[in-house]
Image 1 (cartoon, helix red, strand yellow):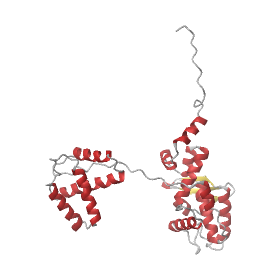
Image 2 (cartoon, rainbow, N blue to C red; image 1 turned 180 degrees about the vertical axis):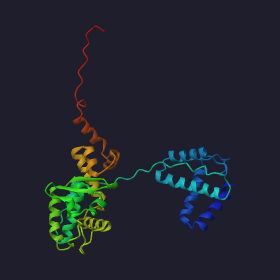
Image 3 (cartoon, one colour; image 1 turned 90 degrees about the vertical axis):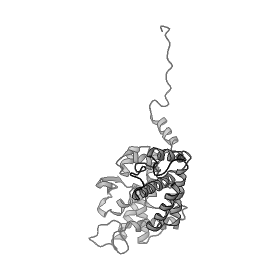
Image 4 (cartoon, one colour; image 1 turned 120 degrees about the horizontal axis):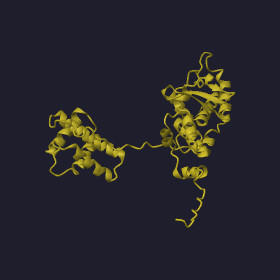
Length: 304
């Protein structure tokens, strides 16, 4: 019975869904994997949610990654949807099943030497000065790509060394800007005067005076990563992540870094920065008043 329905499902995926042979083969493989963990007498026309959950749990315990589990669950759900569509079952038993959450890979930060090398740009042409200012600002203030691209000249307060940023959800924040970034922006603005139109307020513009697009910024950072011979791909988020990591390593002030990054929730900052436990333990030992202080021995009075 199961074999017959698998064959019909294979035809449906190939003929009607027009999926590739590779995808169809993977779906059928996953269905066979689940079938092997169901009772031998079980029919997919009578299988229950609990039976499917048990089979998926067995597969998960054998070390299958969350990504692979998602593929397995997708195959099961689509097969049950197909059976429902064909009138072979009355309800999809896999409808409410969920796969284990996939851990989002954190971007690897650049160490200080790599950042320093990246920012050692010798060119004094307008584009080099602009790109240096962009990268200095990314690393100095931990801005998101969209935040930096949207900046206007008036958003930089040179006397206070601050930048006004419009973050996610329309939340405005003020972020400090380091001396290196301030100097780089000043050098760029000198060149910008001859490029941008007077009425254009965009801080970073193209050689034709238009606001620099997101993809252009990404492409320029990737270009400089290659030209500076770094053994990694350089992109805006890598500089933002490096900013956060280096700030936390130096200050261990999670709340302050949360504010600088513009995170609504502290948990986002904790995941984003990926502090190792040894560093946290060192901070704890150095900061908590009762972490290293020796407890006074209890004095016995003999009146017990």
